[in-house]
Length: 480
Ligand code: GLN
Image 1 (cartoon, protein in one colour):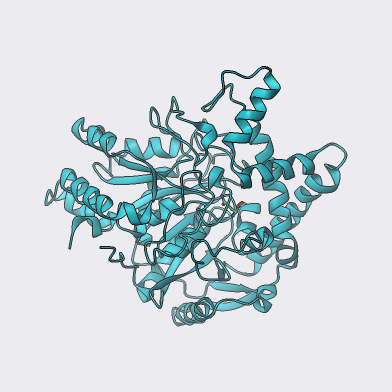
Image 2: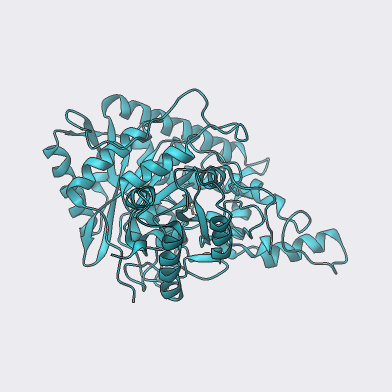
């Protein structure tokens, strides 16, 4: 077995016993990246030189991840390293500070191999909205890896690194995790600091990890889920214990299916996976029940896109050619400068969302659309609160269908938006969601999702540990 194939936990064991060195891990991962990146295109920027300097300087030798390579999504700020959010508008911008989640990893000794490709400003679900070209799914390079954190998911799936970070505003960790056959956690809103995350929809955005085992997600969460005074929405009081234990049980726990979702069609492998996981949970002593989420099933998609676009149009106002990145020097007026910078700098999906967000929040329509959506959001959160009075977790798909081929993605935007039905309610209610691997169907991985009440992240991961015992962990595809 090559070193790049080891999961995080096993690498740490070998490092601690001095059986291997971080230099050897670095070389193995670099070799893997060199041999596959032409096919996968997981990176916007490769940063092996930076990783090497971190290793040479022995930056944080006492950290628990000392010398372990990682990758982070390119909407997380990295001090002195180009950060683009997959947009031309940020140009060659190099942030003057590190995002907190990356800072915590760096202090734990992790070394950065690259900035991962994504949909521009995290808007999309294929990774095809990047200004720097599409990422390919390592399990079948003719297919999309999912999005928006497609590069982060592909990097872990392809064996570039044992874990990575992404962000999830409406499914962007869980959906690519499922398409690429890795585990991904969207933490409770406020569990991980958003400081230094380039904002899309600030009330929905949350940073979280990808890994090839649940235990590795637990390890990463134990480092990044820490209070940060730089993010006022970050938790303070609670402490969360992500310690891995094999001695966990879901005996007697109620795991609900959503009544209204039963009528919606799913691709056969996903429907089969639902049955398989139900059976596993029952065999483990859980009780399968049902909850009703009528507002979620009817209004979550419209509510999410109204809010996400409204917040995005405000957040993206700051890209005007004055403060960051790309600019023009020969404009004859300020207006012309804004126009030229934004026309060139933003891609078409981002532009259409800015325009939609402007309309939704325009004073004469604001009550009818934006304010109405905030009210629906409250109803959605209440509906989930009621459901979690009746059940411990909710089991549901991540997506209704298997990953599409690159280029065959439906041009109908609404269909793309509707495909997010199973992921985005979680963000509207600020809940945690675990996307877990269930097995393969004709070499394509199939993922499902477990959702819990706010702050139940550690319990969700424990449930994941139990499921993983039955399903096994994903394999790194042979790409050579
Ligand atoms: N697909 C959703 C969107 O485009 C979610 C993206 C995300 O979670 N960043 O908004």
